Amino acid sequence: MTDRITALQLYTVREAAGRDMFGTLAQVAGMGYRAVEFAGYAGVGLRRLRSALDEIGLKAIASHVPLSHWTERADEVVEELHTLGCSYAVAPSLPDHVRMDEQGAWDVATVLNGCGERCRAGGLRFAYHNHAGEFVPAGKSSFWEVITQRTDPELVEFELDLYWAEYAGVDAAELLDRYAGRVPLVHVKDMADGAGRQDRPVGEGTLPWGRLLHAAAGAGTTGYIVEQDNAVDPLRDSATSLKNLEGMLQ
Image 1 (cartoon, rainbow, N blue to C red):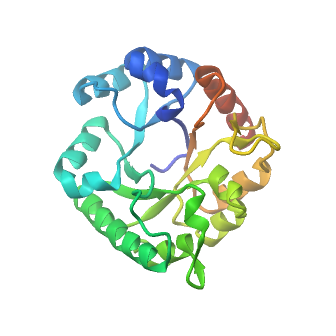
Image 2 (image 1 turned 90 degrees about the vertical axis):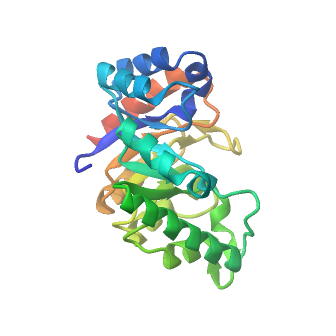
Image 3 (image 1 turned 90 degrees about the horizontal axis):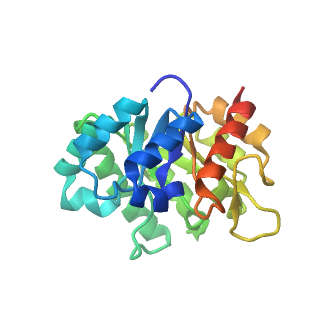
């Protein structure tokens, strides 16, 4: 993936996709998206899904794959992602049992390196997606800093969720500057003013998009993936995010 691409994380429209995956993909393409990121496949056969993507002109940039799948069925995962045409496998979150301390971060880094090695052997790239919890203190630094320091840059990249970093009180633009070259993908959604964890379409909230997008470009980010956890109107909000994001990127 060499050119900038905007995509939709299909978790945003999960209810619609669960009812009608093919119809939802057609609506996503109709908004102007040219790529998607999967978070499950709604029980649809992957060869049929790939055919549908090709027919309507969508690329699968990545798929979220729980870390447990790499120990339980790694070969199947690699085959699935190749069937869909994905460039990336992304670990979407930490398992519930992980200790959020320095030792836990070391353990996670070891697991991530193993996943990255398996992906490289299978012709895929591997990235880890953060939430807010990774920025808790761990030893003399933070959980996030430990896993970034103890993972091999040749094996493990990052899909930085700008919203969750900012929600945790971290300067996401500074993170992009610090980890330039390791953040090929970012998740983008906006933050409602004074509304706690409520998210908004990109450009409809309070995040400093000019600064964030400038930092992302400088960091070598090429994949800008729209996601909302709790969209008011998922399809409409996805269209709004794309329109606003494309305008700001230009």
